[in-house]
Length: 254
Image (cartoon, rainbow, N blue to C red; front, side, top):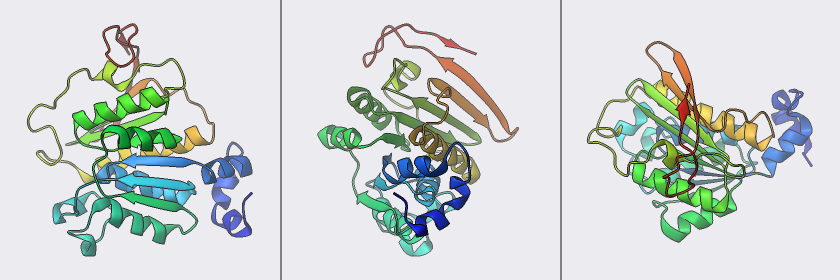
């Protein structure tokens, strides 16, 4: 049950009819894995910690660089040269001491990736390379763990949610290729800071909605954001019959 301090802290969420005490308890008892502690992970992690998610696991093998500070808002100047997951965990603990935060200061792969995913209630893919995205997708599909995937580059953002507890397409149905074209990572190209923050916030929002059993009609869709025109578009996804992860019928429709 919630303590008096938790009632005070989360009273604005508790006041929502479709959250209430039961929804806040669901958040308190939940376990969320965030893979990638860059711009997407920074925004998502801050709001998940602030909302009262009980257990957060954050994983990243990179160190904080001065060029990250333009968009990776969880970090401070004193965090430069520190591991991103470790520095993020310290900031999240200072934000909300009610939340248990565990840092994994390495790039997850192989059996450790699958084990960490199997322990989570929902996974946020906040990475910036497609090889890792495919590995996360495969592990989520095998363990039937819901996946919330975000990406951003330039002025463009994307969000896709996959509920592998249901009969839905997977990330590979959407992106069957194995490698990014040169210059398609934010480390190689430009990125507007608030764009990555917007997508990360949407990832956190979708995770909170999933944990508190809100409407899941957004799962199985791809959302495209154009920041220059403040325009959102959505595409319905169907399974690819040649998908090496999930199989099924292939169709992408407006």
